[in-house]
Length: 323
Ligand SMILES: Nc1ncnc2c1ncn2[C@@H]1O[C@H](COP(=O)(O)OP(=O)(O)OP(=O)(O)O)[C@@H](O)[C@H]1O
Ligand code: SF4
Ligand SMILES: [Mg+2]
Image (cartoon, rainbow, N blue to C red):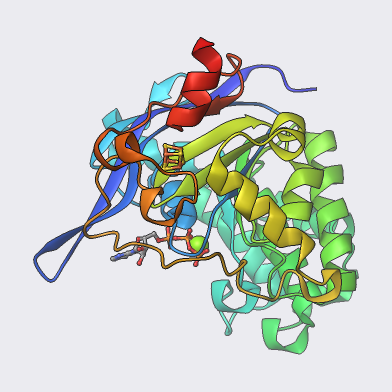
């Protein structure tokens, strides 16, 4: 069961300067996460999911806003304090092979994370490598293998073992199953769920596969052009979506054959994604929204109820609330 508050993200924005222009990757995003809880992040390609995940971990510096982790404002930590705090915040990537050093054996890769953090003696680290290999379902001999000698699913298990070696509290899972075969995806999802239960891990889970997000998440946040357009419990969001963009997104999963769901780029929604250099005025979704009316082109909708836990940024939802 989720308990203590772990992470509080308030009004975080991240912009990139590209050839003298400002690209709005993440705009004014807020959320909170408790231990043992999973927040799913969904949205089309380029909507800012990875940028948000990395900004929360301070792998990218936010341009605005605050990230408080275990009661400490990360932007105020010195480099050495941040390094210590990093132990509790890990990331698992889409491409496990690219995230592992090809010249390091699996055992060394897992141990390396503990060495960087300066935790455990040599003997303890070796024991922990064995424990972790067992826990993620790899044979002990895998410690002596090089990453390229393993299958994709085994490599991702190594990525998970490496992330867990430092006993984190928060793990950002950035498309952790996208590169894997469907049968292996199921195993990795179940492994992540088991580990969460055992270790009270909090996950920020990013995936193009909305079915998996629904299955794993307590709450879900829908991003469009870097902004939150809807957030709520997985139950509310999937059974009673309020925002026109969320509805189109959910409709689109019904059209994706489940056997190749995770391999396809997310849904082709009608209309082009506007340029993140020049986000549209008013509601960012208005150029593609079939329900748009005049107000939508000039006034940005505020993220607010139907309930205190289910929020949506759409003028139509707003009108429904006030009636
Ligand atoms: N390092 C960078 N420099 C410049 N622009 C970037 C950088 N990283 C991301 N972006 C831009 O920021 C926006 C958000 O990108 P991001 O990778 O966070 O999206 P995403 O939702 O993770 O997409 P995907 O589903 O394809 O992984 C995009 O317009 C992207 O081109
Ligand atoms: S505010 Fe207007 S354009 Fe935006 S989602 Fe709602 S109806 Fe569509
Ligand atoms: Mg991404």
